[in-house]
Image (cartoon, rainbow, N blue to C red; front, side):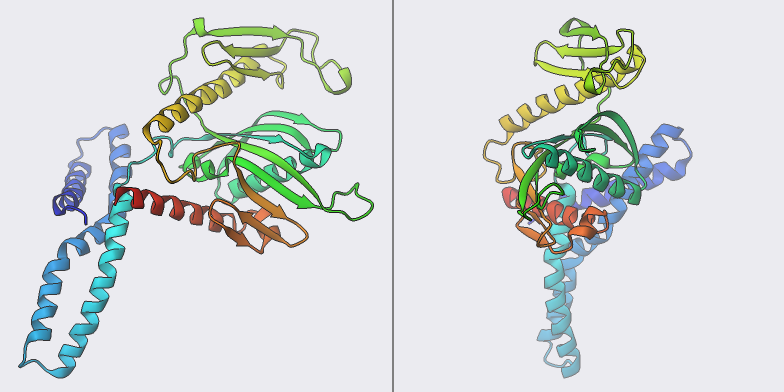
Length: 357
């Protein structure tokens, strides 16, 4: 049961922000922040009011039910209303509990997504390309912007690796569930006997961080420049435009050579390096804080096999929640991706609620 005072505080906060917004005293930045907070509170206020009114409404209905002089139809109606009131109490309580759960401060950030081909040779690089196309379609559907940071292509036309930036609202809160090993089962185009092969790709989703999120000293970085090289030994550039940055304390290394400008390559490499170092530190803190966590959903563990795409059976299965959708083509086209994502969110929320109880 949620303490009544805690629920009352939500309503008080909602009223206070409403007064601030209508006062005309807030500057543009504060007004924007307060408006967003007010909008979030707006969603929970109806449930909070119903939760606070439960005892009074229950008492009123009990009085009607126990009134010997009351009309039989009135008593029957009161019993139905009471049953519904009790059912809704649990729904209202869960909604408030979920709202009060500690928020991940990174959820509102943009994301850097890294997809790498794993086991399976050239077929794995084609699957890597398929995953990128799927995320592109999901982003287009949500009106999110995709910016390519780095691509390494294979001879088969797929990607050995692709790194891209996704920009918009609440990106990381959605895409973080994609981190892990994605496995594909299908007959490759080069297979002459119709045998199903299994290949894999690893997806890492990192919150995009700024200098204010993590402090990296210049003295902790080793920056090497070298001449960029293309496929087959071709020279991409005759100057030392490629950049390799090593974060000495953590050992994180990032190389970037897509741009002809050394300055641009350095900026891109630093963006990826900041995200990787930040994620490593965050993961370490999370592990220390929650040794006995039941849930690893959304944890971003890259070694965990999270999903299988089975083409012969036309299904996609998420192993974290044992959910199978027999709509593989629709899933890859981004049409029903949100259905899977919503199930993952709900599972994680329920596990967190269990830990609170």
